[in-house]
Length: 234
Image (cartoon, rainbow, N blue to C red; front, side, top):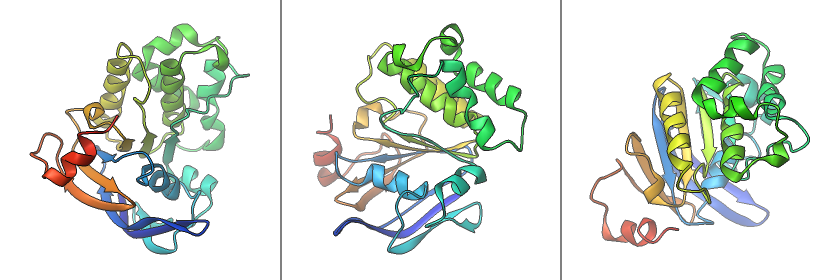
């Protein structure tokens, strides 16, 4: 579904990504783990077209998308939930969730997409009329992921979906991501805390200073140099 090959990205005069490669198949949860500043967000933003690579390629469902306009990438079926959630505070929860159905009007009906979003995160139904600026951090994260889902994407990019959240709300978000995966969507998730990686994840890539230094499965016995990175993440 998604294939990133030898991707190199510069921001201003700094090389942020140094030839990274990874793959995400349909129905897979792939986790990109690394310390703050390792390049996780840059990877996701490069897939979404916010950064133009200087080398390498990004292929989605057989089509090269590296450097393509962001709105076109979204219309092709890639949804993005950023670390800051970016929920519109002046809009209601219901309006936030409905927005992507206007961006990508083809495919399944708007009602079917919206119903699915509330099915994945049923708690949001009781907040449907509440303004985005009246939500907790965990509730904003749910809205952000639900909003990405109503784009009707084949692939979801989730940036730090558990970062800074109360331990009481993390299980609800984890269960929602598991449900999305079971529906056959590919999910690429960036995380700085290895302890937040769900046990149902299919693959784990460790990113350090813009390079992939390890690829395996969650729960594997990690090399010592990898443990120094992910073991001390916070």
